[in-house]
Image (cartoon, rainbow, N blue to C red):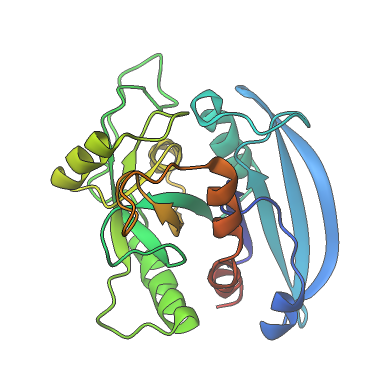
Length: 262
């Protein structure tokens, strides 16, 4: 792949590439900050040009919570149409999103990095480019199967998991900005959700509408409300969640650099 879009959030604050590049035979050529104008608002992008021998590669990084230099935009106020349109207009061949999630099942403990292969969105809030005419987009399998297959292999290898380890989960979209109650998590569990977050499905819906291949790499940053072993009343704290997610970036770097170089 020549040009990969990467969306970061709580689980990937910025793109500070270092020794990861040399391990994949890549060299940093240039790094530029640009602002893209879209019909839905301006979007800041970090454009990173890399070389592998004589071949040029590009990473286009977008921080989904960008907020004109102010503290992070809250999840329910993000203009996802602007973000996806900016990556499309930048010529990205695919998008790899990085998400920090609260985990429900015992086999997705904090620190594990896995993939989304389905989502459940009962928020009732639309996410579409088609406000003026009825256009119905299939999302039976919302995530790109080729990307997920490649990323699953990378995540198994980078984390030392064998072939029996579950690597794909269903993402439940919560409206936010509040975390969930214990009762809500119990209901989500019953309905088939494995992890909870406040953003990602709105992105993949839009990517599907414009035929932009999309995969979501999900970092289990904390147990969901009521699921902390030995302490079902443990409060959730945003800063602790963010800190845990940003300690588990090695498998994330491996994923994005694999997509660029293979």
